[in-house]
Image 1 (cartoon, rainbow, N blue to C red):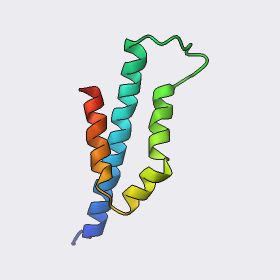
Image 2 (image 1 turned 90 degrees about the vertical axis):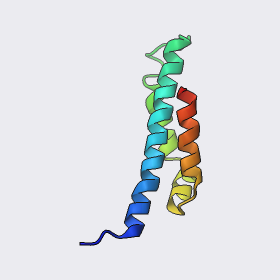
Image 3 (image 1 turned 90 degrees about the horizontal axis):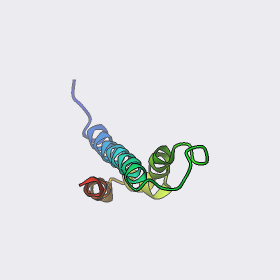
Length: 84
């Protein structure tokens, strides 16, 4: 049973975007806790989750993933360095 190479490449680029979104969510959570922003949690329930969703459902992110653009890898690396 052979695995289709297009399926593997698609999964790889989707993984890049999901990892970048998870890293951005973690960076937003760290930013909010370390800087102790004056935003009440009742006003904005879950900003890190909104960052996660906004990144994943951004049309440019979806389009770059669909055409196998290397910017997905670049975005993941930039998100990684936000946490460093």
